[in-house]
Image (cartoon, rainbow over all chains, first blue to last red; front, side, top):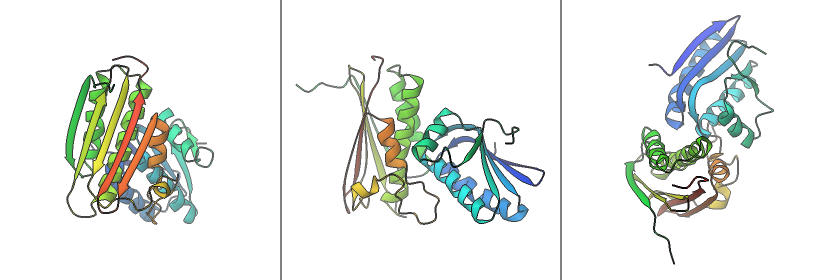
Length: 109
Length: 146
């Protein structure tokens, strides 16, 4: 099963990650998300982690990296489906108020 | 008098990214026997993952090396996990433990590994020697008795 799937709607790109978002998985999906961003040039990147069952600081690094990349190319960034564990890690890094979050991928703030 | 552990696990793994999941999975399985809460188990999994990832990413560069994990469970619900490598070591442990500090300039590593270990455990000790390796010692008190 592929741990990363893409979908597009209204010029926005959604990257849905599933499984355990550690250093191993983050290393794999990072380049693929960036390649797709470069190809599609979306107005927004939505990182959907509703299918993520485990996340550590490497997952946090992936989120921070994509947030920074979006900012530098003028695209907006949203994080969807972060559970209480992921939120706890975002809070520890002081990012819970910085990164726009939503509970479902369909929500769209 | 020093208490003896009621259960102990020793695990040696090559410092490979795919073993991050193996390490936290094994420790998780070991701790599960002591009937931890969901939160306690998630905290331990994450803390172990951080320490092992540090060794995988930093300790050995591109040369092969091993990670040594020793988990102990005591009668009073105390869990200790020691994660050791014999890699390059950390020149300044206090600096490395500063939240958001990272040696990665690419912006892909959060620098939150030690902060997470600290936050998710009840005790964290890090000792390191340049050229000698790094040892991370964590302890956590499980509310439920084993």
